[in-house]
Each structure stands twice: as structure tokens, then as C-alpha cells.
Amino acid sequence: MTTSTSSSDIQPAGSGKKTAFTRFLDTVEWLGNLLPHPITLFAMFAVGVVILSGIAAFFGLSVEDPRPVGAAGRAADGVIHVVNLLSGEGLRTIVTTLVTNFTGFAPLGTVLVALLGVGIAEHSGLLSAAVRGMVLKASKRTVTVIVVFAGIISNTASELGYVVLIPLAAMIFHSLGRHPLAGLAAAFAGVSGGYSANLLLGTVDPLLSGITESAAHMIDPNYVVGPEVNWYFMIISTFLITTLGSWVTLAIVEPKLGKYDNSEASVDLSQDKMTQLTAEEKRGLKYAGLAVLGVCGLLALTIVPEWGVLRNQETGAVAGSPFLKGIVALIVVFFAIPGFVYGKTVGTMRNDRDVIDAMSKSMGTMGMYIVLVFFAAQFVAFFKMTNLGTIFAVLGAEALQSIGLTGPLLFVFFILMCGIVNLSLGSASAQWAVTAPIFVPMLMLLGYAPEVIQAAYRIGDSVTNIITPMMSYFGLIVSFATRYKKDLGMGTLIATMIPYSIFFFIGWTALFFLWVFVAGMPVGPGAATYFTM
Image (cartoon, rainbow, N blue to C red):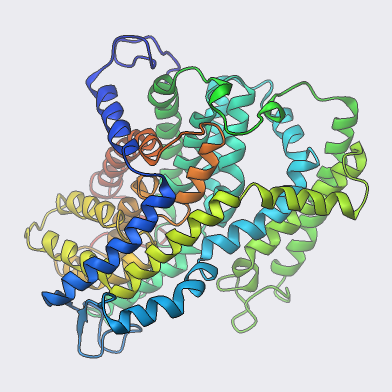
């Protein structure tokens, strides 16, 4: 890892000499910025999906449903047809679902509710003081590593990473005199690009393993796939992604962004300045820390003991528990209580009116995001209604299947295909529900265990999360970025994140081959590498 910005390989923006790779990124940014405003773009996408559904229905586009008979959501006749929204029935569907598409868009509620608590912590001054206490004495390289690593760990409760860590990382970098978009990019790379790396199991693990097990039953009805089957590979991947993400930030992204000019911001950034902690702030942090311990202790009582009230009341397990399902509500409590304690201690919050004002100000900053979500929600809903996303995923999977490769090299194409499909079908569970019934049985017949197949899928699903507008939180990241660059277009964000995607794909795929096929290590506890009938 290096922090040098004067090598012949990488030149800062505006230094005169540019490499072919830097020129490529500049071209991507230029082309991307020719696109309309993201809100306009999503509106055009939504209309485009309606028109495309009419054209596809006219030509009778359809595919065989790869899901087994009796599976939830499987087409009654075993064939997935395009649903034509460019028809009388389609128009009635659009009109009657327009509002629910918006209000039911999952990231909207998640973001707004979480920000109620985060707003209290932010406007009381707690977040600023805590950040200053952590990073004022840290080196440039250390701060970058901490940001990427924290992003990966936050995947255990992904909303926390998107809603809290990403904007916080931008503030950290700006306060240290570094480009805030570099901090945003580093955190985004950890949270979303490193989605399948972690030291802990998260809510997505039992979801994916259940789909994998169902697909494996097409070959072996007794095959069991547990949530922990990729844990070893997730752990080692955490250190790889942390290293790669930090290096890309320091060696490529930050030099390309160059020196930040505060005049580019769309808001007043004076609050992002970092100063040494005062005695009063240190006292506030002390009491806030005690409040955090108290909140954590109370939450632990609800989930750690077997009698915990937030455990799954049917199974007694943590998986599928109200604790995990209600993680957003817990985020509110986790930030609101320490935030108020800090504010009360330092005098920034005295009563309930101050708390309400903090929450109101937090909501007030989300105006553009809410407008963007309205159109993004229509686009995503229309894409799902028409079955176009599912059909494109199946066609892509079948194209890879037709190649006929049988050796480990097949996994390179498999990972690449998953990454490409992820560009149009952003949900990890939705994509795997469609592709698993094809690839799990196919690769099992070629001698590979479902656990290994799932681990490879998770690489492809993660590395392109950061460059696809189909990712649910992409609009939110754009809105965060415009705080620091008022004329930022979607192309700028995509171009900034492309180096992460490229190096994550190369490094993660290489690690997969070395770990599984060279070292012969299992991807998880009790996980097999090869399958035999």
C-alpha cells in the first residue's frame, strides 16, 4: 500500500500527465455526466420500461421458469411471460399502484426512520466530537483503512452503513483536508462493494443459504446448506477487501479527485471542520459512552438470553428474530439516547423541543432524496411487474450455461455473469432466487458443492453493487455526494467507483481460486468443495 501521488503510474487530477486508465475514467465520467439529472433519468427509465414491456410482449418474449414445481412465485404454466404495461390493464395497474410503489419502497422508510435517531446524534454534536476524538491523531493511511473496514463490518446491519457511515466518512475526509468524495467512495466500497465479506454472519446469510438448499434439492433432496457455509471465506475476504479498498482510495481515487474546493459544495460545510476536543466535549463523550453501554446492555438482554423477548418466539433463535427484522428501530434508539445525553451535557440540547428540532432538520435535508425515490420506486416496481428483470437474468444465465466449460475456469465466467446481471437486478435474494435453480444443479452435476457455488455467486453480486443505479441505496449515495459537489452527475459517482469494482473483481476472484482450488480450504464450517452423487 502506498500514499504516493507522484508516481508515473498514477497522476493527480490536473497534473498534466495522465495514464490510459485515468483517461478511461475521465471518459466514463464525461459520458456519464451527459446523462440527465438522476431524478429525470429514473423517470425516463420508468417510462422506458413501460414501452419496452409493450414491445417485448408484442414479440412474445418469454423463458422457462427455472424454479422447481411448487416453489413460491413459480409461474403456473412453467413459463415466465412479459407483463405488458403498455395496455389497458397495464395502465390500470400503474395508476392504482403509483402511491404504494413509493410508500412501499423499502429504503425510503429505512432511511427516514434511521435518520430520526442519527439526526439527534448529529445536531447535538455527538457525531462530530466522536469522529474528532477518533481520527485527529490518526495517519492518512490509518483513517482510510478504518473507514473501509468499518464499512465491511457494518454489513451485519447494512442500513447502518448506508445511512450513517457513508456520509460520516465524507465528513471525516473533508475535516482532515482531504477530498470528501474520496471518503464517501471508500465507505461505499466497504459497505456495498464488500457486501459479502464480514467477520460476522448477517441477515443475508440465512436468506441465501435457504435458496441454495432449495436449488440443491433438485439433485440431492437431503442436502443441507446452513447460514454459516461461507463464513471462513467471508472472514478472509474482509482483510482482502479492506486492503484493496484502502489502496484504491489512496492510489487511484483520491489522486484523481485532486484537491477539494469548498465552493463546489451545495451546503455550508463549516460544521465539518475539526478542532481539538474541549474539556466539556470530553465530558459529554464520557456520559454518551456510558449511555451507549447502557443501551447495549438493555438490547443484549432482549436477544442474548434464551428468554430474550426479541428472539424468534417460535424457534428461540436469533435468525428471523424481531431483533434483526427491527434493526432500524434499534438504530434510532442507539443514536438518539446517547445523542441527547451528549447534548444535555454540553448544552446543545435542553428539552424535547431541541430534540424535535434536530429530527426536523434531519428530515429537511432529505427533500431531493424523497423526490428521487418516488421515480426510482416506480422504475424498480415496473421492472419487477413486467418480469423483464427475471427474464434478462434467466437469459444471461442460460448464455453462460451454453458455453459448456466444466473446469474451475467456469467460475470466472460465473462470477462475471453474476456481476453483470446484478447491474439490472440489484437485489441479492431476487437474483439468486432466479439463477440458483439453474447454476446450483448444473455445477453440482459437474462435481462442485453448493457451498462453493454460493460463495462464487456472492463475489459477483457484491463487486458491481457500487456502479449500478439498480442498487436500492444508489440514489441515497448520489444525494450525499451532491452535498459536496452540487453539479455532481451519476457519471462522476460511477467513474469514481469503477476502480473499486475492477480491483475487487480481480482480487476477490483470485482469492477464491487460491483458497478453494489451490489451498483446498473449505469456504465455511463443514462445507464441502466437491459434490459426488
